[in-house]
Image (cartoon, rainbow, N blue to C red; front, side, top):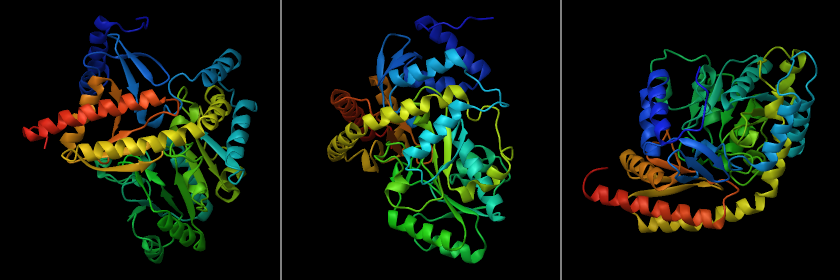
Length: 423
């Protein structure tokens, strides 16, 4: 049996070999491109250390590292729980999950008092839709074109892109997708039959950091409530101050029945997601708490991170607003300097999308950035977009460095386009 150790330059070769043999050759290929033959070995704050000694700024990690890597307060809270009781009996009451639930409910002003914990975003999408169908006795669910809600079978039905459903004959939920720009879309679907819930992202991350119209969403909320349906705000990527607000939907005055959190909820250290909802939506689970359960739901090691993570996020909220304003200026300048490559810049807060003229151009930018020392996230639902997810802990110097690296990568891609290699 091999003993895991930190990977050095020679060990990286073995890592890629194991990925090819035991996982996917494509993962080895993409990881090799991103790291130029090196692998990740350590991280702190905004910086990731590679096996060849290089470091990279992390503006990616698919929105998990809002507090950066290994935030000291969150690490200490998790370490304390690890030394006390890292897992739950599932028979006795779990005080860590109870405290985390109270903390989360209070964080949103106790307007959504019921809490269910999962590990991944899809976990809480699944339970929210399940409860909506049980509470209403209706089958049909509505989602939004361009939305992404996960890849487990039920959540996958809500995800709009057909890319993820290739090879599957059908998904477990009866879903129709609404045009995000049409305020009357939900009303027309209601005329076709009863609806249990509408699931929406106030800012669509995988679709290229696209904020949805607040007025359209408000109209949908009103129409759904009038017909007894639930509105579920999926803020797994955009919530918890990523887009400036604790909850984007609640801050925009949308009367939603549930808010879903995930990604940074575990402080960038442990996996955790949560559904916060009304008593009406939660009623089936209140009546039978075993109606939907999971072995690691409310896991003490993960839930221990919640109070520390929320406290850290709030302490950095004002800095996050400054970062967002500065990011506006920097991205506007880059778009003006590189019109051959950049078609548009979108987003809100610290969730931004740089839309390129083609998928090949976007891919070129991502590879150039990774090689230069800036990690970003591609958008699988909109392959022309490069997603930037700077953490709250990044400094003005970090942001300036990232902008300079992006400037260089866009210039390199422009040269490639002029030579006919990435169009």
